[in-house]
Amino acid sequence: METNTYHKGDRYTTEQHRRTLEVNGWTFCPVDIMDEKDTLTLPVHGGKWFKEMSVGSHTTD
Image 1 (cartoon, rainbow, N blue to C red):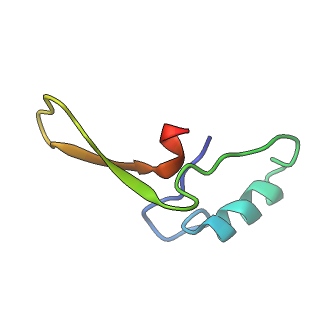
Image 2: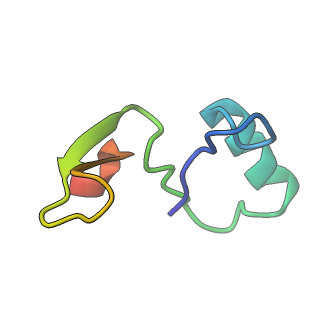
């Protein structure tokens, strides 16, 4: 399981992330990029600092 990064770099987009996985030899197993298609906003019950959190849409699969 992986997610794209929020900062510019080799894993900023899914396309860049897939290339980085290949360059680093992660071709021997499937890698689920959790936010590949979209994100979800889920509630954080009783959260001290925030009331909701953005997560990859694959989280619910």
